Length: 335
Image 1 (tube, rainbow, N blue to C red):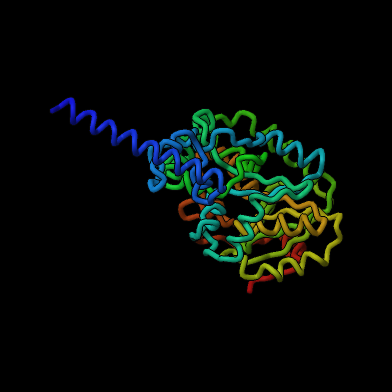
Image 2 (cartoon, one colour):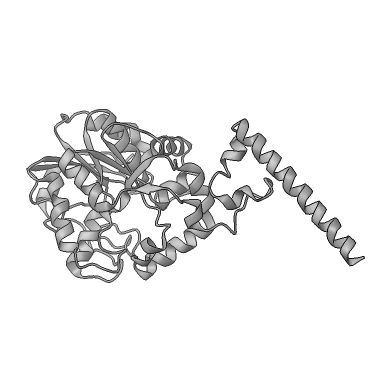
């Protein structure tokens, strides 16, 4: 009886396996969106197509073959070839799949635009992403960054895999994260010296949040030729998106645009690049530089600047007394 029961079980197993294979073949032939959602690793091909969780699939299997150019080579493309860059991190991913991201509420228009950008092929525009899926990449991170991304991948690996194009060459969004998230910080001085070449002797236009204040209180932008600023809301800046675009059009195309405005910066860098500006989504470069100057081991509040990731970093922010900062403000768009 045991032998007969075993063969009955084995026959049922073969039957189900054959049915599963036939279904996958049909889905492949007709290029079904359902199949495309599972086209990540070999493990998925051996599953029932109704089981979409992929809990057993490792991050490295899901993202195997994904090409991300290093942050050093990405930076070189920007400096030498004057390319623009728009950047994606966990906040931008969250908005694409329908969630709030830090200081930007979910917005359907922004979500669709970000997904468009992530898969775009604009000439001379680099699409920067941050997906540290390899063990080697994670081991280079600080303990806090490593823990964050392990938890994030555990919850969101399949969501991210569905929105990226594995046939596309991406660049590193970590050009602005040279200090706080890495264990080895020995090359920080050399890196920031190289980074500053982006705006060397250039006329700079900064698009930033009301309390971001890039380059104020440090020498980050001292080698630029001139600085103008467009001041935007600290929270939900996408609400005034069209006004920001309109204000930029008052400047000629020779100006270098630096943007520090959360997920809105990702969209702006894309749209302004298409208007023939060189645009750099600089993200946290100013805060990273402040941490470097202070030799801080983790995120800390900076007295005169909005630091969302630091405990207490958004409270009791002091006013700016440097008159040059106010002279640099060309437009103030807060609502």
